[in-house]
Length: 254
Image (cartoon, rainbow, N blue to C red; front, side):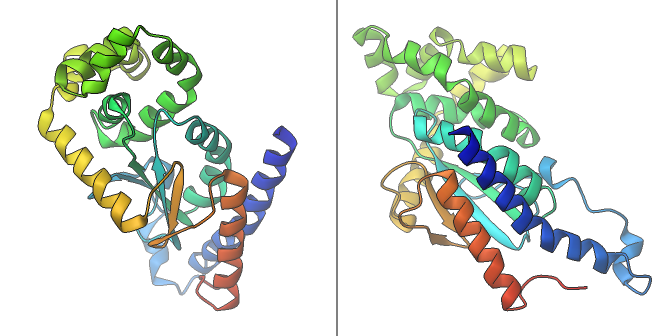
């Protein structure tokens, strides 16, 4: 599995770094009026709250990717682990791709973790998002092996159930210990019923608009990518997309 991922990552980096270098050459010319504006922002640290999620990267990037992710989906965790380094290096960092994360709510635990990931400063969203998915193999088996009575409390997805899930699965401790957040702030986020309703409404809207029937699902430049469910598949689509953009002159040139 690891060699295949390495080849996909390297191929994507080679495909997407090219337009970034062309852009750098254009900004380096002495007669370019943009040169006085200085270096571009750190797009890896640029996070904005959108209507239905969080967008990471340059708002006007050459390609806009939406990831529909469930925190209790093992395929989603694998995707984020595999795609993160290559997308950061060759896509988001140089401003080629923006990545918008939109949650898919399959169960009460999904709702609780989504609210935890969205809790606090938007700038820290990516770190919280990845933390919960990278550690899924630790907390998800614990949840699956919990007594049925405990799972029934979580399935209610009300404020008490969300707080109970976070406490018993140590999800709140992860934010406190790894992200430096106050427990009072974490609990307040989990108890916010209006925020919960908004997340569920956005989830329903995405399911309808983008035909989200499973996770992960992806949309590129506003269109759902049918039959694309993994990083190797998505990497191939991104490579082909940028190849076509280069051929049609849609990418910046010197």
